[in-house]
Length: 158
Image (cartoon, rainbow, N blue to C red; front, side):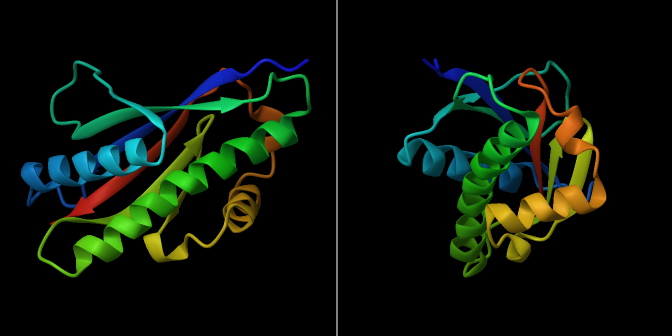
């Protein structure tokens, strides 16, 4: 019988242009994402690294079946959950883009030190994201582990 194993996805909001910082905009978008994800039932907690100038950081706990299956299935599960979070960010972009508020400008997803950067409008489906990751990192299915780090970094444009 499979027991749920928590996996954490780190969600980071940083300045799109460090030369023109907008800490209030970064913080506001981070709080909006926090509230939207919580509203959808995710367990979201603020994260702290002790470093200054990081922006807004949150840890999103997700459940995945006990890892008794192959790495490819784990990767698929991680990408599915990451896509759900990305779709929340895309919805916030559409909502906030109608006003003068800060919006996600670029999103980087990193799984076990392998990254791909996308524009919010490129988030179509978990399958499309998986294909993009595998295109840029064909070794990812062999490298992914349950203890690996998953990070979604959102560059915020004011």
